[in-house]
Amino acid sequence: MRSKQRGFTLLEALVALVLFAILVSGSALTMKHLLRTQTEVHVSSIVLDQMQERLQGVVGNPSSTSGDVCASINKNAFTIDGKTFHIACHTKTSTVAVASGVTVNLKWPILAASSTSQAEADGCADASAVKDTCYIVGN
Image (tube, rainbow, N blue to C red; front, top):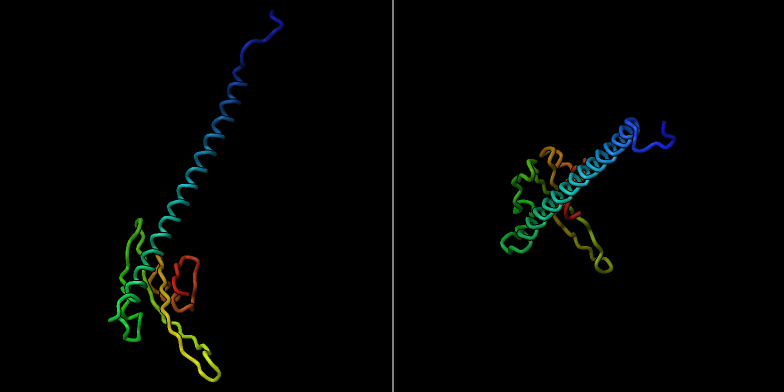
């Protein structure tokens, strides 16, 4: 009989293999989460860009100064990454004092998008039912 042991036993190799598998699966889950988050951020960026382009198209067009900016905005739904985003517009009015006794009514459009439904987009635009799933520009 030898007094010194050489190499690994089967149990030690099995424990090392299990630990390695746990580390690899943890890394894979982390990468999956990071890729999903990156996709969500990219989609959010595209949705906000779409909404800003629609607002800028109306503001830069002198023929759209009919008073109702929301009537001039393209509110057609669009699809990104398999999700359809519904668009809604609401005009917000605020009274501002410019001089003593002189007030001016300011109007500006608020554009909202939701991938859930048109009703949710409408609620987000007029601030009656703002949800976490809405994208809002102009508020």
